[in-house]
Amino acid sequence: MNTVSKIKNAKTGFIATSLSVLLLACSSGTDIESDLGIENAPDWVNEGSVAVSDDDGRYIQGVGMSQPLNDMALQKSTADNRARAELAQVVSSFIDVSLDDYAASNGDANSTNIERVISTFSKTSLNGSKIKARWKNPETNVIYSFAELDLEKVEEMIEQSTAMNKDMKKYLDTALDTKFDRFIKESETEK
Image (cartoon, rainbow, N blue to C red; front, side, top):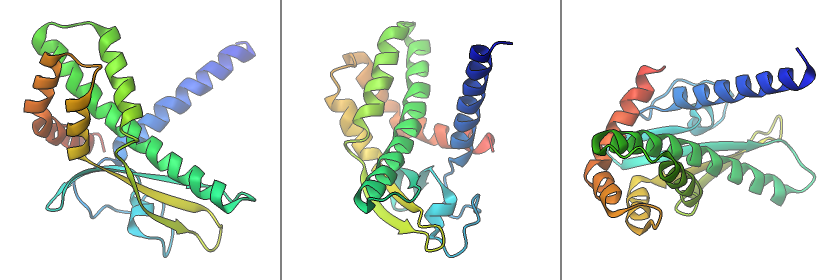
């Protein structure tokens, strides 16, 4: 096997492992056992990125981190951007499932349009997100950022989307809550 093939195989394995870890991190509860086991860290650091449905609402939460850098502002920004990237991945997975269902129910197999919608939502979801907290590990100086996106913001993005046709918007509008619940349940069963 040549070097290029080895790199491609390693890259594919890394991506598959990363996606598996992300999907395993999704949960509907707020009491999640720690994956990282970082002592004295806030719960959200150890919980990682999750989709949450509880009495407070429905949220997608992402956690990002940054190793120590010579510039504290750059380190915080890097952690924030990584937390938002985690949100974008979860939103992308959620929208992907929803659009697959839409395509199946309407016989619309236009994968190019669906891929464009998923890409647009991944990028747009960053706009509605908020950095809710940061934590710096005093032992390692690693900074963790906690980003959150309210499902209501996702609903607003669907309404304002120019990438979706009217039928797709109507389908997602009527099925969003059900799809979100199903997405959480599917994520739980993959644990």
